[in-house]
Amino acid sequence: MNPLLEAFWYILPAYFANSSPVVFKGKTPIDFGRNFVDGKRLLGDGKTWRGFFGGLTVGVLVSLIQYHALPSYYGSLNAALRLGFALSLGALLGDIIGSFVKRRANFPRGYPAIGLDQWGFLITALILAYPVRTLETGQVLFLLAVTPFIHWGANVLAYTLGWKSVPW
Ligand code: CTP
Ligand code: MG
Image 1 (cartoon, helix red, strand yellow):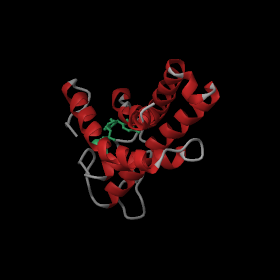
Image 2: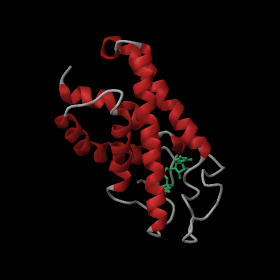
Image 3: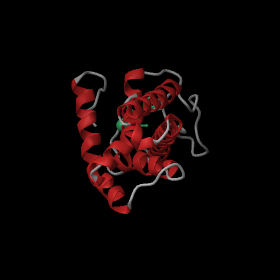
Image 4: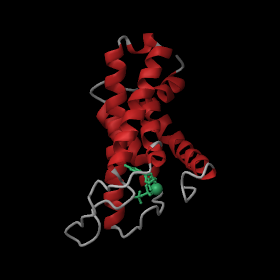
């Protein structure tokens, strides 16, 4: 496979895990409404349990579909699911860390944090997936370059479809 196409194929579960929580419209916040020691919300109402587990499920399902589409890339279903799980969990944890940082910086829920929103989930996904399967440095740089555009495109689409109240 072309290395750039391979990088894109590799990261797909992370993209889906990051973008799907918005359709689950969860209620119970992961922080259960609690504040951090600074008196501000730990994560805020935009990070819910339903969104987290929904995103994780969608990400793993994507890797299941990927395995059936291209089994030779993974070798085994187990390898595909482990990569999908690591990428999805990493993407969702990165998103949560991002919200933690945003609340400390007084950004209200939904306020765009340029850089953090586009790269945070990608970097944590790559870190968690690293022990499972690695990419070449050039492929990682390619993903760092294209992900902001894909992230914006996905958010504009979610806004257009009425899933999100803001197009970022
Ligand atoms: N969402 C969720 N659970 C998650 C992540 C996202 O329920 N773990 C839903 C929320 O309804 C959230 C929407 O998806 O409002 C969009 O996600 P995101 O842009 O990541 O959250 P923000 O609303 O921007 O909140 P924050 O400022 O904390 O990033
Ligand atoms: Mg947001």
